[in-house]
Image (cartoon, rainbow, N blue to C red; front, side):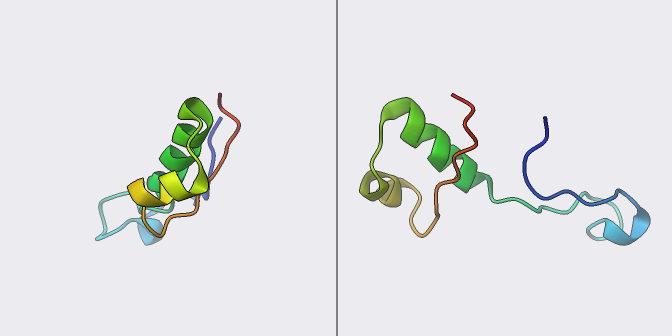
Length: 60
């Protein structure tokens, strides 16, 4: 399963003509995992991941 935004891999979508583009902010995924795994509140997550909205993918 692939979660998040995806693009077709072709020359025009590569970053600097060689690297896959970064399309997802994995801090949001980690914030969601930490909230679910460790029971962190939104305020606690804000202290760890300032300005990032937690994304709960329902993995745990």
